[in-house]
Length: 78
Image (tube, rainbow, N blue to C red; front, side, top):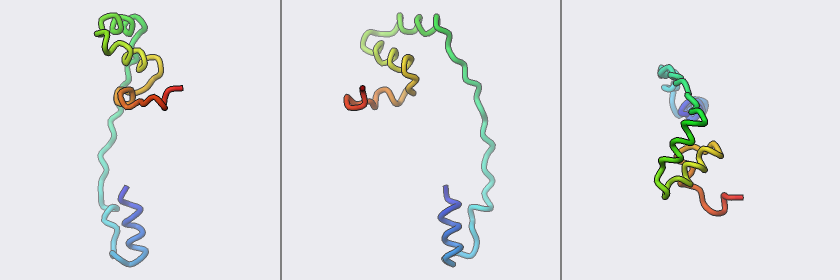
């Protein structure tokens, strides 16, 4: 994210060197995603409290992420 502004600053002679070139980025660790089986999802929905069951159903049926469901507004629903 910082490489481009620093590169522009070097080009404009605001700074002499791009400090972002000396940064070693950490290796990304890929986590294995485990998709729950249908029976597990149904079990969770059966045990969910009534006030959040609809949110769980919406998440499961649409593929929305956990933080996206509560952020929905009425104009987002088609």
